[in-house]
Image (cartoon, rainbow, N blue to C red; front, side, top):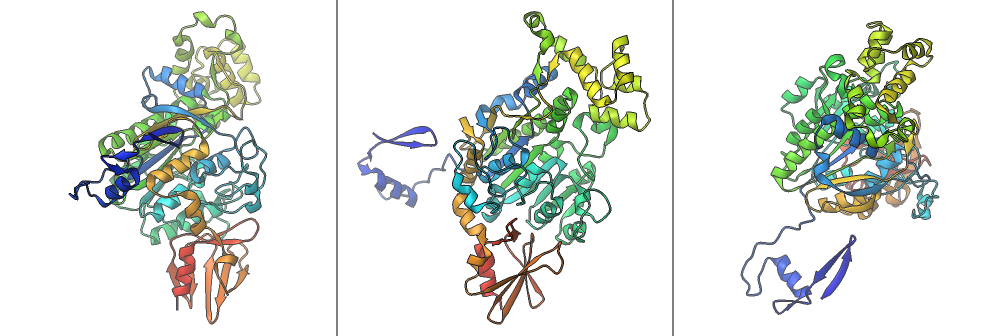
Length: 557
């Protein structure tokens, strides 16, 4: 037997296949011919999938899914497809931020804190190639860009601003995750078919914190590009368009637990996932869809068990939508994972050090089930003067306050912190931190070529790419080339007349072209040509263009 080691799995090949050498059999198979010359149907590669759905529940510790399962009282959809574990460290730290975590999941490259879709400038984690820093800040291709280049439809979904770190990792390239101006512009000009989430403020001009500072109204651009711009759940579900941009909130969407009361017009994560699948699946070449349940992470930062549970369950409903489609389709790879853990949430705390063997599940869950709103929803109502302090406490599950609890609330200088401490004490829920944690996380997967076992977060990107039929490293060599190397015999200059909108100018002979940064546009003699990819300028000032962009320039008159 001939043995080969592929992706951690030993595959055995017979040296001969019905009297034909292995190599000969492979050739005959590729021609669709049997040994006797008769036409046979070629077998589908079991590792390839027409569609890929990637779902990320941001900042979700294992303790959070455990708690959500008990709260629900039955198995999660996730439980059915748990296939392994994932390491999450960044290029510089054992505990990752969302930006380098998303970069790893989307591009297959470790990176640094706050970096999105670019290579690291610092490498000190074991096992990470230190030579990556030689190309620090270089943009690297992500799986969405690869899927688009392969002719597939694409989509991104988030319950945060769509410009937030994790969705940005699958659609943009910046050295600072807070640079919403650049992220939003790159997303709009990426040509993504379905974009659903919050972040409308970052698309509009205005005086708000996240409003655009570069003078470009991207809402107008979205409409000019033929998107159906929708802003409510009903509008989304009723849309018949092949291109949909959902801007359902100025910034983030409401927690699922609060949505019906505070933002009833907003869609659920499952609503958005189902609609995106229905829309994208009409493409004959298949699709890639990224989905993020964003605010589990935010609730974990606040040590809010209600927000955590509610949004884990909302995410699980989205996973169920993806699985329902994949089971019927039989040609869809589904991967679900968290980008990193957060808060160290546990069932049990210092109060249960000796009593834990006799504490029933109900003792942890029943106090939590008294809450009808998350911490965010509760504080919003209290700060708006809609409820008294006692009423706010009851909304958060703190009914029949003891004298000690009332005293703590009345003396509190940080009401949110006091609320979560009191509720967690009642439910014996523990937290180790208000930040991220570095433990390994669960891997959930289903479908052709689904990953199994213990893997690194970078492996997920390469698995998805291979499933869709392309190699990220090879594609990157054609997608992001230094403009100074790409345009042979040309003179390159940077036009900073408008500091917030730099333009690369390329002159070759009598031909002069302008390439606005972050856009997929080339301008020659006042004529605009749409490119297949965006032009990116790195922190070093270097512009990066695709091979197709160079070819388009060379052919232009």
